[in-house]
Length: 66
Image (cartoon, rainbow, N blue to C red):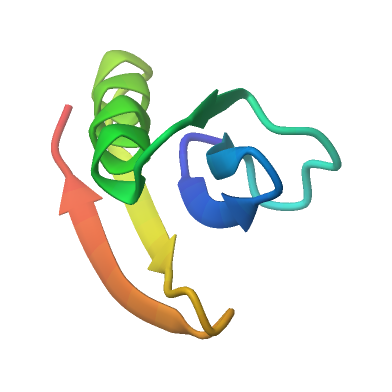
């Protein structure tokens, strides 16, 4: 699945596949994780990046073209 989620992680912010149990990558800041997620989605043909806030609620979503 080409979509990725940016979620809070004990070591910072994680990039995960929907339904994935483990992080694809972990970053110090949410901004770094968001950029990594967008690069990944773009490289696999485009899709959606959903970003979770510190409170655990979804705060943003971006469509990334291929």
